[in-house]
Image 1 (tube, one colour):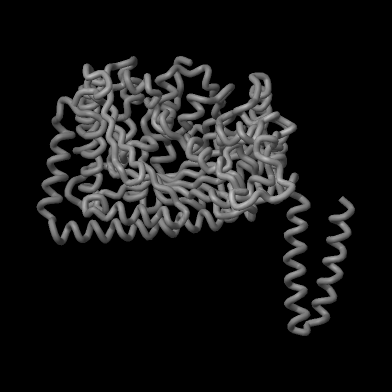
Image 2: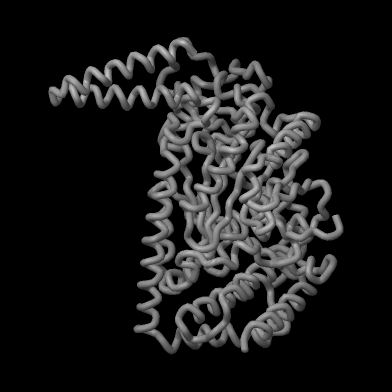
Length: 174
Length: 354
């Protein structure tokens, strides 16, 4: 099979793209593929996860009426690294960890679309996340307290209450 | 760099250990993405900043607790020639984007190649663990242990609500991507593969061919991985992937039984023809080689022929363009590669079959 780009060399790379159920096949040689930037697998130049994402990012949550007080996307800018929201939506990537803070108001709809969720429930780093461990522990204790009260186990409930107070003191002391 | 130990052998040492379900599941990979809070993500980092990031991570390698993971060799991408880079990608030891996009990109690779820590890829740090067969939990536990050591030395970008912050919003939260490489020839032959794989995408998992996104799957090898990283805990992600893969394995086994009972002679004929082609062909392109190797692998599983599985795993890597040229010792045109590929396969089968 000849390369369908140059028609000279034999085709050595075979791509199949399926877009909306429509299948297109490419048979090209290495030289043409290199030109097209499709040589190294996974970097198929034409289309990447980031292109796909920027489609999502342009999505305007205010389409059914902009929420009052929400800045328009054009004015959003990360003050730490300088990335603007519109640059972010083109790149599909954040510039630094502070971008999450500055673009926060726009992130819920995006993250819900990508993950179906907006809040982390997994691993928490030991050092940075010390207070989160305590908060999670606090939530557990409060749940248990409710259960004990409901089942009229007041002695256990009192012990839990003291534990909770102690923990709350520690957290506010930080 | 003249002699890079990681590009000499087609199979990493970790692939020679026993895995679970290792005739159908080739390997398991887990990677976690982490970033440093005080530096911009690699996409915006200056040359100096990315150098500092690399230095910080290199210091962590001296931690005593890293010892059990074996000696880690720091490799800077800038020191490698193109063929070595390509071979490392073909062995899944580094990612394609570490090769094409990174500034001061580096990898710390363990002696047995089961642990590869990438620096200045899309995120500052990517910890990757590889295991043979289906061992998702084991791979996660190891990656998480390495993660804990790094966390003791550096300040991660972490947010109470969003979790571990990553450059791409598709990784935020756990930063965890777990994947298995699975061989599904019988589901492909019985035309059930499309139905099963589309069902897989309904439960938050992604499927793609092994060598390249967007390119058609060759050799019936698929990679199944989690899509969602936010709002699920690591153990939910791991359990979900494991549970789905176990079901796919059952379907594949059932399809093999059906092939044997309904069309034993036809499937045997296909396998033996492929075996014949690989044993005697003088020219073979990579697509045909992958398909024939898949047939032979199925033939081994069904008991028609005897070829050690490790020899077939080796050939999957040895027949890739980068590895072929590395072995030959220089660049070859695609036509020359097809001839050399046929030779490599013939000789490797001869060496491994008595």
